[in-house]
Image 1: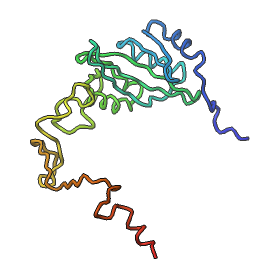
Image 2: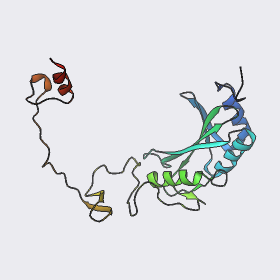
Image 3: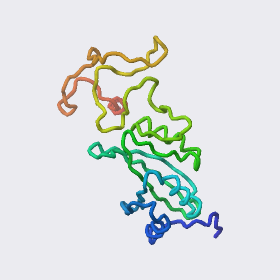
Image 4: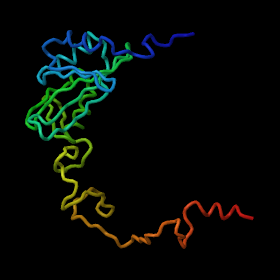
Length: 209
């Protein structure tokens, strides 16, 4: 059989958490293994040093994603989670840190340029500030959008809505209108004998001799 890649087909977590915690030393605050994933919690100001060590000395070459999590009841309400992949070992780990609304997180764009886009997404949706990011702008919401939609306290309803206006050829904000003019409700179950052909039933009628 031809071996196309030297990485193992199935990677084991055995011993990985302990060895990485020992290698990172004081940079690590806590470690755990949940749902088959190894999670390392590191000090916020040490994130660049920790990720560089994992990349250069432990073969986690690829930054796959940066995600945010919001815990509004905590003083440092946000978790920022870095998902790393080792191509040579076929293994993944997660590294996370905590941050408050006004606590900058050091950018890792110097390690992985793609982090610039990923940090912008977390900034846009959660409001986490990444110190040193050369282009920290919103990336998913529109210009002038107020708030951060993935925060748990972001209002689900409000006084204005955002939509694309064909007339103005741009995105506009306007008062919410819940129009019901074109909706028809008969509240009749199909099993009670609807007076119209249900979608799909027209094929059965055509098949009859």
